[in-house]
Length: 377
Image (cartoon, rainbow, N blue to C red):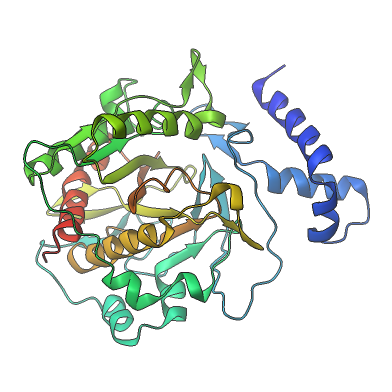
């Protein structure tokens, strides 16, 4: 029996035993049990496509990944719910409405010029108006697994929260790791570690070190478990790993889980920075909440810090590298972002980018992080 079928059967048993009352209260009405079952399967299992093999797999059923239907959105909530493609724990949306323009038939996503600060009308308007609806509509994509409420998005506080980090000579202050290090490569990857997302992490480490930061790069492939690929428990494993590292290096105050996005075939997207084709970055926040409210067993005391850090990075990138970043993605669960306020999950490039394009993104990304952490620029 394939691992996918095993996961689906386990999911059915869990759904039957645990979710009965919740289903009656929360699901839309269905005429037949078959319709309800199809809905439960579609919303409870994150089904992704393994691009290299062309086969569908149930990725994270056992890794605290459950998904909920979204029927309506309260007036105060702004949801951007275009065609979501569930891929390996992070959704990729076709909707693009910010500092770049997407066209399936055109490879170039825009040209990002020199590194001097430039006027960005979106960032300026946000800072001038502090309008929460403008924030939601122009800076975020909100996945159907979660919800947004006004009390979580005080625009002024998010923009002004102090996330600066004083550099300490000889100390490790930034941790870069890869929850999906074994399964995320690029279009021309050779199969070697240095051609995967882990290799991109090495480049980001080098660029941050040039800027004066002490960086610990954890190259552990947390989705390679007992000799085979198993993304279902990857976040559990990475949590264990990074907690050990934090104990060994207590000065670590920045956690970066570096991923490679998945968008499906036929979307070669990139920007141009200093004459180089460069993969595009997406910052990501796990909200620890469903449509109906917080997930108590996945509490995140650092949620406000996480939101401030990603938003400030997004704004800084828009001012210095227009076209380099997608909207910030908000999703329902926690993704180990609760350990530090300066925790980021970053999707860098996708499976259609080359290794060179992905590695070219390391320098501008490091520059953006430095500008936020140092408070300069």
